[in-house]
Amino acid sequence: MQTDFLVIGSGIAGLTYALKVAAACPDKSITILTKTQSDETNTKYAQGGIAGVMDFDNDSFNKHIEDTLIAGDGLCNKHIVEIVVKEGVERIEEIITWGAKFDKETGGDYKLGKEGGHSEFRILHHKDVTGKEMERALLDAISRKPNIKLLNHCFVLDIITQHHLGYLITKSTPDIACYGVYVLNLNTSKVEKILSKITLMASGGNGQVYRSTTNPAIATGDGVAMVYRAKGRIENMEFIQFHPTALYETGIRGHNFLITEAVRGDGGILRNHAGEAFMERYDERKDLAPRDIVARAIDNEMKIAGTENVFLDCRHFSKEKFVEHFPNIYEKCLSIGVDITKQLIPVAPAAHYSCGGIKTDEHGRTSINYLYAAGECASTGLHGANRLASNSLLEAMVFAHRAYSDSVKYIQTESSANFGGAQVGDWKTDGTNAPKEMILITQSVKELKLLMSDYVGIVRNNERLHRAMKRIDLLYAETEALYQKTIVSPQLCELRNMITVAYLIVKCAEFRHESRGLHFNTDYPEKLERIQNIVL
Ligand code: FAD
Ligand code: SIN
Image (cartoon, rainbow, N blue to C red; front, side):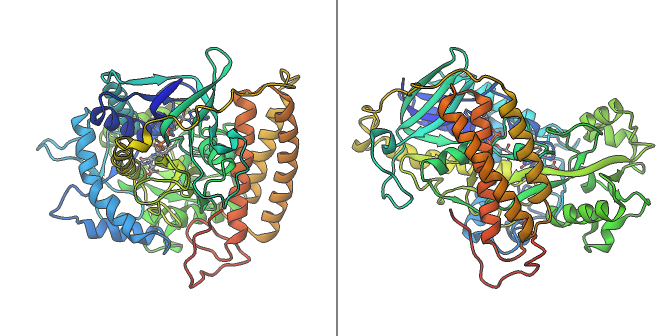
């Protein structure tokens, strides 16, 4: 199969890019691949909303820029922050024209929410299901574009480069090029080769590397792992954001329901098991301090009390107002026997967002030619050491737009006339057999999640990182041996990808000899003066 533009991922980044390319190049073919159903994405689960300066009477670009820089703890690229904040408003207006609806006041102005680290109310939202609404609007718009093919249940295994033409490729090889992908079509159980002139990696996050995460099962860091295998540049993977308030349900681990930070924005108060509103002991911004600070404070309170959770107190809210803004959360809590008007909500931090990823420039170009990256899998320089809440949907749209504008310029040049990978062979299956028992995969997944949660969580130290790496090395060796002799399956490939992502997180953490933003190492509790991105 051949396609002019190939998009890996059907979340906000992939769909925004595809829509724009389709409109600008009606004579070109665009193919979107997604590994399960098209709407099963991190995007669908976004709750709080999308940050953007809409109320110029009280807010300004400068304030949003400043809040982003403060949250990023010295590591943001200021130029990129300015781009995202300023261009973001246009992107928000665009998705509204594509049909996304955000809540409005009776007078017609947008209702703006507030979350940790924001100095003003600037978060547009659709009740507490903003991502679902944005995903719906995007998929509707996609279905009206005849030159877009959206293929569900197509699991991308690897990107195709000169390596697949028999050349030796290393990190220092100049001009590595992406010619397309090998994909396991789960509808036919066959591995197919798809050649493309331009590819966008929009494969989302990697929360599944941890035991407790707000991310759905698809978030296994496949794109980052594929690009790393293809010898592309990856950066700042140590900055894993733990959301302070995932719902704590005994026995539920893997995909934890989120209690949006907007609840704290509206006045929710964190309390420990003694009932104390403890955040004032940690930061003057209390419950609305940036996420790294709140998550570490909760972690500390849990360790002191020897408990697995703290509580979010919403008993003082008017029930009517709570239900109007957070109907989904209200229902979810009731379903587990928590009436938020009378009882405290049990919450605990959970892996939520990957701030690092595939290194891109300001146009979304990766270090591999013809390969762009946007959305959570990318590291653009916006988030630095800690993402400001509700900045990621914004970043995904801004960078999808920038990647689109750059790549349509390329497709109009002569050098894009042919498919570079025309000589690449088919996927080789010689010597591989069906897996004998899935336990070899499922047990390794459990081990990986456990070691990452216990050794590479909110608070780290050198000994824990060292132990984690030794265990990852072993899992890597066992899994590679299995991979060489087994017919590929999503489970095996996801395990392989998660091991690579875990390796990258630990490696970057080991290289960072300081504590900054989301990375806190008790052996290096101070911040270094020299600002450093860790690039692998
Ligand atoms: P995703 O939306 O995750 O899409 C990834 C796509 O890649 C999927 O289609 C998947 O199938 C595909 N894919 C992955 N691997 C493969 C493969 N091997 N082969 C084929 N396809 C593949 N951010 C905010 O700004 N505001 C919020 O309020 C907010 N709330 C959040 C709440 C929750 C519970 C979560 C989990 C995240 C939240 N975030 C929020 C973060 C934000 O939702 C994500 O960062 C963003 O949606 C990521 O979009 P994306 O397009 O990069 O990836
Ligand atoms: C939330 O709603 O609390 C999540 C917002 C985000 O991750 O940006």
